[in-house]
Length: 398
Image (cartoon, rainbow, N blue to C red; front, side, top):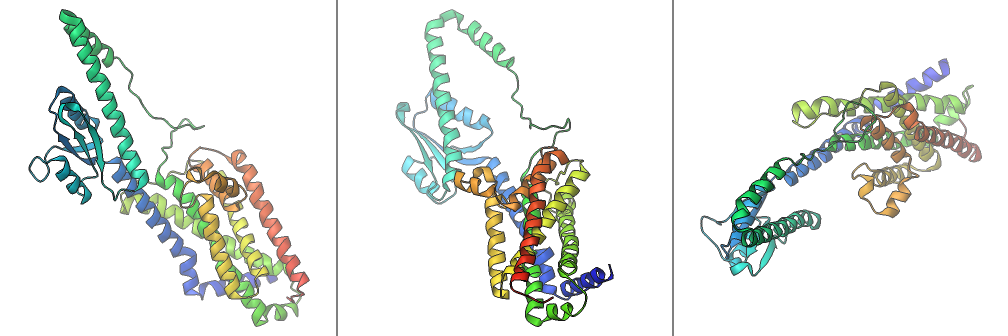
């Protein structure tokens, strides 16, 4: 036990004396997570807000008036009929829209002869699609409604007031459409960008210990520390066990920092929704333990296999970023191509992220996350056995 204690003490001293390494371990993931969440949160708010729309009506018919009313009442568009305080032609409107003052324009030709959506060419493809598609449905719905009203006006005669009243009463009885979220708990947890991003960056931060952990192993190999330790009755298990113990504590601190940011800093300082983690503490601890050990195993494996600091730093950092991308750290996995979704199934980082999503959002427990947690434990054991084998084959003296 004393051997493990003093070996762990050595690891702690190496960590605390490396100030840049401490910033990489703790501050960098927190800052990166904060920036990504703020960017996505404010992007979503802007997309959910009203879109500035220029309405150019060269028709002035009942249909164009109905369409204008529907645009105003939809709640999705901030509709202007004047640009810079005056009526404009289609050509003038296109020139104004191209400057970015409006996201789009809707042109109605004389006698309803033409309907054209004019969009800003600088809009991104997905945003343009999300803007144009609702406009098309709204125009088509107004056309259908206006056509039915004209048919009723012609055919109903004196019965039209009664028909209009019946339609109005029937419409008022329609149920309100509400949104709910599937879950196993009676208490509803509303998913947000924060709910989905924080788990990814917890795993990203944990796996980023590959840089200081691998550097520690390579430094000890190159500086002869292992050879000196080998003169004492200290074996593989004590040396690697001390690293596991110390970096497990580091992972726990990273987890707590992420929780602090999500639970307190986001709602109190940045006016964003707080992170909701459910109420299953044992499942959260179990998921964190499994993820931490997998990250530690990855770091030890890289440090054991790499021959130089440059190899470990380059390979480790690139692999962590790559695993983060395909595992859902920056974007949800379900929006990625099918091939990447298939590859991500074998990523330990994705196993950990899915565990947190099950607990935080779906209200799952230990039983729900047990299969992926066992995979994480298995990965840790495999990494440790492989690392010991690499040292034995290379006849590295501890």
